Image (cartoon, rainbow, N blue to C red):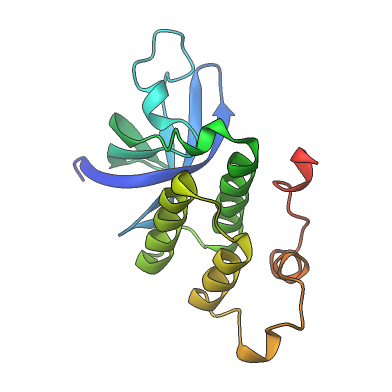
Length: 173
């Protein structure tokens, strides 16, 4: 299969080998995918700034044996307005962790992509309720019902679903 373009939000990254990085990208049509970006940890890499965490980028990728492989990338939005506030960065990391933990790989979730994108854009302009995002995400994924409203702590409920503690909120306390 040849290469194709996809827009996505970088929700997670992990260093791999000496100069590569594995990205977790939330896309509209492919859902959550893993992409290997070869050579981006080198000081001379021109792609590194376009695939930073919390960036919306247009990615040119092709399917590999284990991961998609990045060939080109263009920055669409780096959400720089939210990166000026520690509180907003913390919230953005939290929604990215939730998205990564709750979604299976390579299953299209257009509504979740739109919710994440809308949250990131809204967070640049004003403070947004994290609780609203959590409930909307849980509803879209089928984990939420009317009976739960006002009866459960969202964070503990999500931790119960994913089977581990959330790291994003603890790391900034």
